[in-house]
Length: 420
Ligand code: CA
Image 1 (cartoon, rainbow, N blue to C red):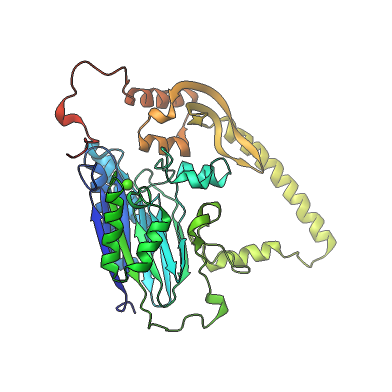
Image 2 (cartoon, rainbow, N blue to C red):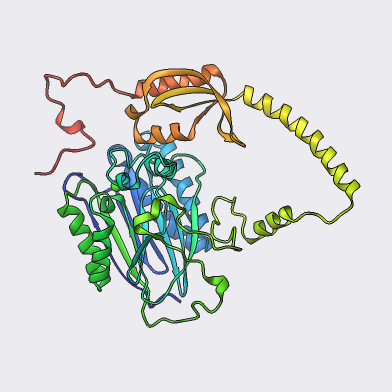
């Protein structure tokens, strides 16, 4: 039952960009914002394709998570098969609104906010380098939204054949207002102003328009897209009929970055994070519970099990060593493109890789997409393959010497110049 939702939406090119690479969707039960990236008009293509596939796939499968994954695949394939679209990608923040609850699927740095009464909270985490630094305590969260590298994404649709999707379920209450937006909004105006507009503009279309207007008024450096969805105040439905359904925990707007987007209530582990726990569903919590419960069996059985585990661990250790010594990837270290032997990540606090060669190539000189690939680690089949990857990255970086005395060709500037 979705007919009673009211909504408003706005998407503006802003004052600096030449085209609008954002896309949006607002037709219950699905609402979404996508923010495309890529040279020329590829970002435009990526975000539009994301929305198109999201909506089609959701209709077919009824799975928001599956629909986002399908969108990722579609963009990835299109980018692979069209050289002029190579490297395109997009964010997506999608809402499946239902009576009493909603599901959010999210990749990238667009955002979902929830206004409930006098509280504005974020429902999504930005998948950005800056946000990770904040979470690691290496950057003040106050500085994150204005950080020059704030848009360096760690995840986007279309970059790889598979993507990790954050999926959350939230409880909706009468009078709740959800905002989906691209970074052209919160990159320009503070959360306090966003909250004030959401609280004072009661008509959702007017609220969406006002938000965009304020972002443009503040400089309009980026495309800005807003979708405002209102849960009717009268719809009491069956909300809160059971404590077990209390899933919402929006993060306060002032302190959103240091916690997960949805805090998991005690005893409900696994019910909210449907995404990364490889689409496990409710069964996974049973499995983990079973794992944590000491088996009430005989001592001899425990000893036998331990012996088998030790043998298995020995074999696994050997296999792991072989695997690590035959794996390479290209990543980033201290801002430099670096070849690593091993695999990215760590196990129980131990790094699974060693530096093989640090190059002079600065990560910051790479395109946004290559930076994303680098952050995730670009796998290589051998040391020489890794060197080929580095050579490929170096070739893509155009040297930027001191300003050329000759004027640049007028039509070759994909970033565009500020509108008059
Ligand atoms: Ca943007």
